[in-house]
Length: 184
Image 1: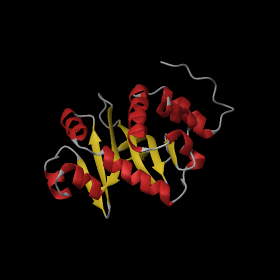
Image 2: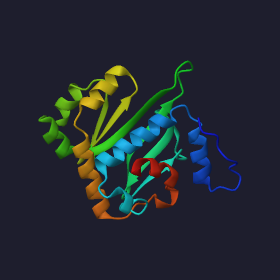
Image 3: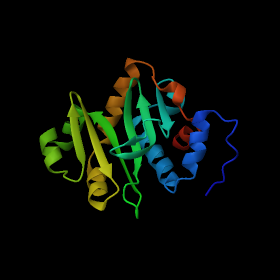
């Protein structure tokens, strides 16, 4: 595990990064972020911060889902998130969600959202207009169903469209230390 330096003189986003480094899930978070960015964001290095960003331990962290570790944003929207569920005392469970383009997901699956939802009972699938949010947890059934779902092309299409529509609203909260893991 890495040893953080003193965070007294660092901007808030840097101290949050130092805190996240201490989480036992840190390696999982960086590997997941790398996969997500490589799968969904064209020209990630060039568009970093201005069109997409990763926020470390966002202040909207506590929720029914657990404590958010990272949020990924493109344009004016949060498009992915990882959280740790600490409600179970003996086990910390990781979960997350990705938001994707409905039409592309349906085409990739060869089924409509209702059929996708029915065949993915371990996932949380919520449709909102032209987008679908797919939530998963670190249980074997949920991970198996999420990994089998062809969500990457649908996420790529949504991110492309959001980046075309305008700049990233969360650029000021961007954590370049985390983004480096996605860009290596």
